[in-house]
Image 1 (tube, rainbow, N blue to C red):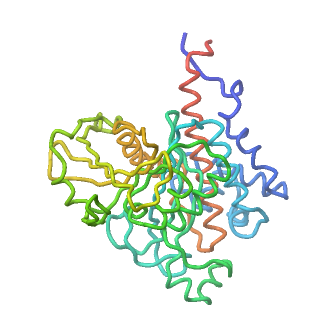
Image 2: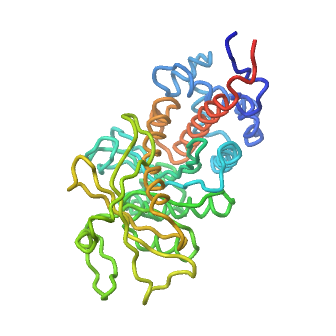
Image 3: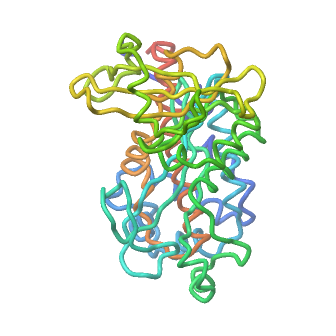
Length: 383
């Protein structure tokens, strides 16, 4: 007999069950129903998940209802974001979870879409006309999903009040760097009690002294990538770039470790680390700082650098695995874009961006939870 999963027998693995968690956020019943149809289409087989095709999938003659959902209907995307976070924690939460900050680009034409400008985006690997979103994901042994999002608004936008007003940017919104946006999302996660042990991120966040200092003062361990020219205080009060400290380390200190499976098999690197001095620096009691090195096996000249802050008894094996988990957010971005329409919106306004992105992240989280839960329960129901 074949093994199947009966979704109705397992709460949380039906989209309708998830939607019930956010239904009270929509005052009007027609908007409430539209939000469900919107999410159904996001994870459906629609070729391009814009309002026109989503409406067609839902059986609507015009996109008016879908456009109203994103533009004018009364509901708060931040409240739904909180529901998203609670849902992810309920189904994926573990005490040693990793919070990962990263950004992704959305290629756009013209100059009207909120936050758009010519800027570098890893999505294209070059400077393109695009919007940039900063995201917070949650990674555990059960799975990975996003729990928060912020739109990066360049200074050329915040300095142009008329342009911001046209795009619906609230007057209270001021310029904030990507690390500052990351800090906002991390503060929300910590305040909400998201179970986590580490914070991880790329050089954009690791190079930011203010973000690192804030995490250390609040005793939040991190493994953050840094550029090779970042300087650190050393034992003799020198402040050399981290790349120069490799010469201070014996070759025998390298340890070959796998940090998990990738698309081409186990991701194996050589790892080493050096403890940084606490003398003259405010390191919380019971904590330490390290520089972590990752070396390619096939190309030993290819070195990546990380700053680590964590409990004194932290092991090299643990921080290497945390560093390896950061790549998981790239996979999550691919999934959210490919399976939940994260980047297929055609909206220009501030509220509309947040509404689409939030519903897309919720749809992606549903797919993650459904996959994890179904795999866990496989074999439980037989016919």
